[in-house]
Amino acid sequence: MRLLYTLILYISLPLVLLRLYWRSLKNPQYRRRIPERFGRLSLPAVKDSLWLHTVSVGETQAAEPLVRRLQEQFPGLPIVLTTTTPTGSDRVKRLFGDSVIHAYFPYDLPFAINGFLKTLQPRLLVMMETEVWPNLLALCEQHCIPTILANARLSERSARGYARLGPFTRETFGRIGLVAAQSPADAERFLGLGLASDRVRVTGSIKFDVRLQASLKEQAEALRRTWEGRPVWVAASTREGEDEQILDAHRKVLRALPEALLVLVPRHPERFDKVALLCQREGFVSARRSTGESCGQDIQVLLGDTMGELTLFLAAGDVAFVGGSLVPTGGHNVLEPAALGLPVVFGPHMFNFSMISRMLLVEGAALEVTSAEALAGVVIDWLSDASLRAHFGENGLRVVEANRGALDRLFGIISEYLDAD
Image (cartoon, rainbow, N blue to C red; front, side, top):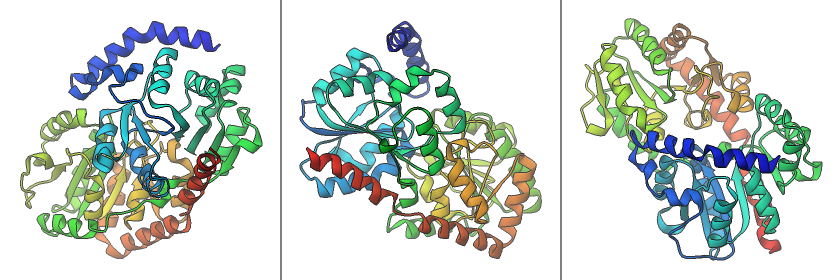
């Protein structure tokens, strides 16, 4: 089955390269450093590195405290961070500069994986959340490189999909050295795919251990002053097909609260121009953050078309909508706005964050909506009632504080592997 899987990957290479080219039309970064994706690194060889794969921006941000602690406790350890997206690469550079080695994650082809392993010689591979690659795991096993699936989550839908592959799934997942699962439900799904019970631990989600910059409050207050004290809601990490619904909701919000401001932050930078045109086409008076345009009382929508400022927008806002949830993409991180004390609203498609979203709903820290009309109603209620906002926000803070500690547990597991060497 793995040979068949590999053959399919080779046959698919032209389509993979075409997809890279297509994405590069909107973001030229996709056509740069392509050899890295095939295991050919323009880096000096290192030895006994720790390889941490963080996929993209969200996982990189969540892993920052872990990387900082590893750098403190193991100062001589080379740390290799891989991402699959240019935005993830930019985030790595912004957070860590040259203190870590960054490369694009190699395609799951034997020659690419072997080239990568030969150059960086990792002593341990830590994969974040849902990254399971058959050839990567097989070759790490062959080279005696331990593997950890950290902050691991597995939705019911994904588990059913993996289960259909039968022996191939059991063989692949059986090669993972240890799964550090976010919740007991996640752990049970991994066990159901054939992992031995001694290879699965429940550590919680490190996203509860979110750390906010000490200067964030002052920066948010300064930004808030430029918004002239208006009621503000932030639509964070919106996806294709969702922006139209957000703007529809905002049109209803403006009928009740004409001074309200929407900060609209698309998930992917290649969509910034398209969303800007959408705002104009829908008749909204809008401004783009990247141009430095003023955001006076006449501006109805501020497009957050910069990288790395979402946390600042949330800290300066009153209400947070978490995107990827009104369309079936699985949602995004709800804990960052909760940690900032914001009331959180999201759509029905939160299957990538099912445990955390249910926890916030049960504890009265968030609300779920299924339509633009319902979203508008929630936003109007919260923007109109400071005490109601505070009630939901305080509940969210309590949930975050009560569930911290996953970072310590995960660091302890990684340390066991590193100390054993």
